[in-house]
Every structure is written in structure tokens, then in C-alpha cells.
Image 1 (cartoon, rainbow, N blue to C red):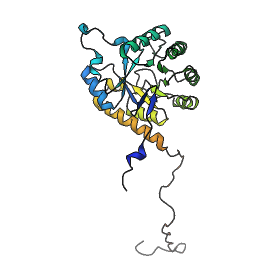
Image 2 (cartoon, helix red, strand yellow; image 1 turned 60 degrees about the vertical axis):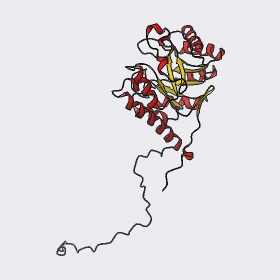
Image 3 (cartoon, one colour; image 1 turned 60 degrees about the horizontal axis):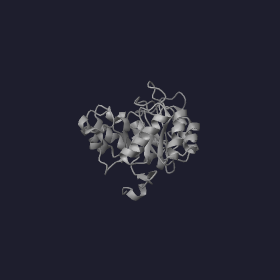
Image 4 (cartoon, helix red, strand yellow; image 1 turned 180 degrees about the vertical axis):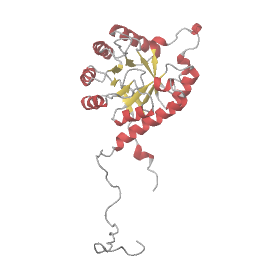
Length: 283
């Protein structure tokens, strides 16, 4: 049988604001041991959109090389984020700085609650979302896996909601898939799992839920072999998406034969020996 035609596997691009992406893997730029390693990992991941923490970008050439010098702007869309902000006002100012610096309306909004868990503060997140949307930003908002909060963020005008699979950098994968499923039912904007995935199977399982993308950083940057892991995450994201679109078979408690039952050879009836009689020789 000939392989399935590529056109039959076509998937609609993921649209976020004015941008459209065929890769559904979004990759961060932090925690690499060198800018050169980061650049190669981005390439192998197949991503088309990379996140940049605005507050950590070196803007003074006298202070040494800048991260931005190692990200090909012609190849990647930059997604500035407000990492490290713990209140709405600071996050909004950081987003405004990113717009001036990078010339983009895209922003990944993070308003964190505390330094220990790095979980989003729901009140500050919603407040900052409303303000940035009013200013014309395309807001991809990092949030908890609370379905009701996801609805409020959509109502506030968020371009995408990005529930954490598990705490940032924890590598625990998606701890509450049912919450993600509920969010997918309740909101119409794209849902992107952001944070917590640690290996390729985490990405594949997340995509099989029906989400529109996965954003990760530590899973690649802190792997023993970041380059090999970047390629693995790329393939897992694609495989998980295709599996979701294909539709898995239902789970069953018992076996279900894959071979047809018709046309089986009828069992041969063997003659029974009289009770107490010895079996024929050779048996």
C-alpha cells in the first residue's frame, strides 16, 4: 500500500493575532549554557515562535553579547514575555517596553503570585489582560488550569489562554488533564499548555487532549542532551497533533479481536473412548 499523501495530513495553521504558525511548538530562550547551543536547539525544535524574557535582554552592547543577536528574526517570530512580574502594573509596563523594543503586538503575559510556586496570580492576571487588550496587544496569557478563569480571560479579550500543565520547570507533565479538557470545551480561543512538560511523551499526551500548542523551555534547555531533546519535542508535538486529529480507538476493558471470525476452520471432533477403556496406543 502506498504511503498516505501529504495533502491528506494537512493541518490548518495556528493563528495568533496577525501571525500564523504551522509548528505548534513554542520554545523559550532561557537556561541554555550558551547562546550558540540555544540557537541550534531552536533550529532542531522546528519552532517558528520563540519566547524572550524582556527583563533579561541585554540592551547595552558594552555589557557583552545579547540574546537577540543569536535569534534569527527572519526565521522566528519573537514572543516577548513578562517573566518575573508579580503585579499587574509591572507586567503592563514590561509589555509596553517589549512593544517599543521589538515592534510586536504579541505578548506572553505572566503575572506571578509568588517566587516559590511561580503560579499565576489570578486577579493580577485578569487585570493586566484587560489593560493590555485595551492597548491593542495580542495577549497570550499564562494562567492556571481553572476553567472559570480561562473563561474570564477569553471574555477580557485574550488571544490565547495558556494553562500550566504543572509548575514552571517542574517537568511533571500535565497533572490535571480533565481541567484542560473542560477549558477546551468552554473557550473558543486557542489553548496552549505552558510550563511543566519534561519530556517528549508529556508533549504528545498534551497535544492528544486537543490543545492547539505547547510552550516549553526547561524540558529542552536542561536536558542532558538539549539538541536531541529539541528534536524529540518537535516530533512528539507533531505526533500528538496528528493522533488527536486521527481520533483514537475507544478504550475497552476486555480484548477485541482484530482478525475476522468468519471463515475459521471448524474444529475436528475426536472420538471419545468408552469409560474405563485404555486409550489407543500412541496417544
